[in-house]
Image (cartoon, rainbow, N blue to C red):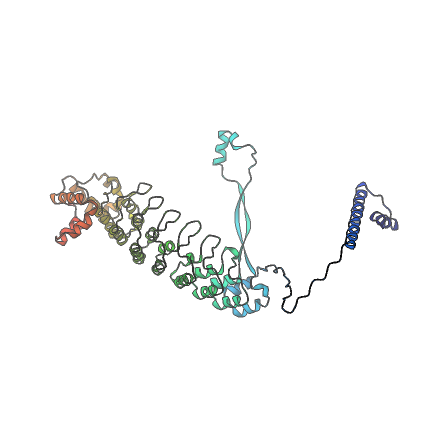
Length: 499
């Protein structure tokens, strides 16, 4: 019975109603399709009857293996249960065995949802092109406050049981997951378990992961390798295990182009630096900004309490062939960074290895300018020591206008003024705040008394000798067979006096 007749029979067996033109057209199309399908099947049947039958497939002999059935892997499970998340994060082995009764949970995708407020700008209603707008309208668009609204947005963070356990150093949980078939190189959320273990300094987990096939140079979504994440003193053994497993010591972070040596030097990790150098780290490798590991170490020595270990890192880099004159893209040298951090011993080491004291960076600032910009942040004696080292290696004295910055450090101001053949005009004395005038009254009184008269002949001889020696002043004077007091005088020792 055709489709059209069946429809008619159903209608006639019950209540009747008129067909619309659309209904009749639909029934007609369906009937045509059914007729075409019947004709196709009949043709296929006739062809199969005319074709010779195919021989049976040979049965596999005892030596031949039967064909194996290929099955598609089951879809990955997703879980947002906080209890399951905490089970792996805190290494609760009893809870782990309970959760893993479901084999799919071994490689499950664990998700956490965080609600955040996001600013959504309002879409503009002006359809005119910007180039056709009047100047007034363009200014309105530039200066008008942005319009829009704050909306609540859900941010989903993904991880895995193996990542959670490795990030917290639960080696027993990591071993159990690997035994049950956890994918060691899976990177849900952009990182793998090896990245998390190295970041936390968990050497036992790193060893387990590498033993089960983790790739030592696997890159995270941000372009960092596991070796780049060994950023704490506790991660030294992790770095050793990675290098033993074949990790590339000179691998670079994708965007910044930094190496593991850059990162270790920036954090002042002495043992890491020594380890990387022993494995052939390039001490002259430059980052995206053109900085070397030496420059990274000099910029990292920000706290005086940490200057000692940074000094040892810098000395080791210099011994390995680092060039203290290599500047970044902004022409900022390691000496600029050391002066910005007011590190006297680091400044001395750089100058002894050939750093240039008078070179300017891309903004026209010399190391002395960088020092004067941080006068308020460091102790008096540290500032004076750095200023004296720079002047003894050929740096030019600060300009008279820049001397105003030295007022919080009287010792630094004394060193600066004793590098002049004649005292510069000190009109800024009058504009000093009352508390500074009161605090430095003895020195200011001495300065006003000396300002009107000429400098002593002894001082002028010192200036002439220093000018003749130039950048070699420190080395040449240090090699002279003269009394220690005279040597210190020539090298601008601070004694509270203007000569």
